[in-house]
Image (cartoon, rainbow, N blue to C red; front, side, top):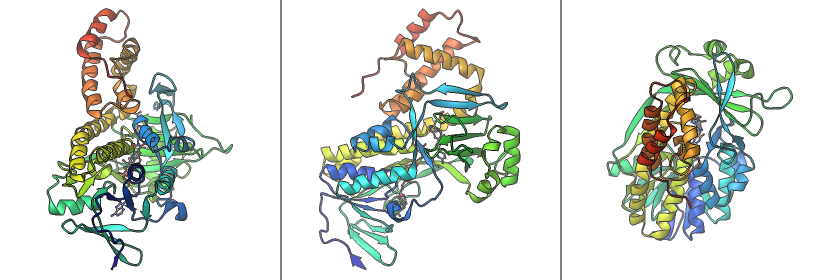
Length: 458
Ligand code: FAD
Ligand code: 8RB
């Protein structure tokens, strides 16, 4: 056993577990605020060995995440490698494509970025800020009484004295398990009745994108769907979401050949673009989807959880990383205001837990919208009215998608206002098949009565 530090419980010292997405961003923010930061990661350094995981996986970055990257000064480096997505390109069963814009113009877009590239930019920033990075160090057990964390290295075990631990170690958090062993965190995991499989669309013969690059593609088919996000190397990562039971489902589509038949029937325009469909389906694991709820995120001043470790969510709003990044800014601000970790962790949990709950719920709800409602007539009429009201009342009526993706008001506020707006849209379009002859003055009065102006963001 090797004791890696002499200074046992330096109160200005913080130990972060997990150098995925939130870990290195939070480490950077804290180091710049004058904290002494150690960051432990179970995998090797991706800058040396290449990014573990192999396949090119991309994520949608929206305003909340981008703002956090801005506060760490890495937004430009990240956007350089990003592909703009202006809206959802909906692929109907017969192959026609229609773009539904996410925002009012190109100032309201989301960005597709590679997880590996993003991770490297963040690790470089953390290192430049003075963070000590420890790769190939897997957190195994924690003695919260003595404040000692035990890591398993490649050859040796390491005991690390800590003042406080911050768990950025993802949905399967080992720190969470260690905390749960000494205090009841009230953990509850709700499985989604759907799973997913990743496939790939390579560049065409001309080396170019085979679909419109500046969009998030969706093939909505009711209870199942397929999506594709662009990568800057001109490929698309395709994700097929199917229920676990029923037909079609992962119970009936059991291998690549069966998946190919499903694509021929339901995603015919995509099939010729995925040459390795059979191989990818058989080789790639089937991923499960779940929401993780905890009553408690912290253990007095000794440990706190952030990101997926505290509140993993289903992917349908593309907000897991964005929310984790927003957590980083919030926790750094609390630790700046209050250097006593017990006070800061408690304040962080009170601020963020209601917001995490709200985005978890909205992510669940967005599954229906993406897979089923995007091509439904009532939905399209409500959407038409929503866009008109957003234009007539820009300070009061902001579509929920825009509140989540392009604004930074608390998720809980977006959820609450979204509920009011939905009811208003349903009331105003009840019994109609078009907006012709709509009593706009009456609808404007409903907006004024039900929605207060949104405070401007700083
Ligand atoms: P992670 O990024 O998972 O990082 C956890 C880190 O901890 C990892 O590096 C892991 O190796 C390390 N670790 C784990 N255990 C230990 C241990 N015992 N000791 C030391 N280190 C450990 N979100 C979006 O906002 N938009 C998207 O479009 C989007 N797309 C996604 C696509 C896919 C396929 C997946 C799986 C997720 C997607 N997400 C997306 C969600 C997003 O990836 C997560 O919400 C985000 O990565 C959470 O960040 P994190 O730092 O909490 O955890
Ligand atoms: N995790 C996304 C959206 C909203 C799109 C819209 C949806 C894949 C796993 Cl499913 C999904 C969105 O409403 O039009 N923005 O960004 C990202 C999404 O899935 C990602 C790629 C994903 N996340 C496990 C698989």
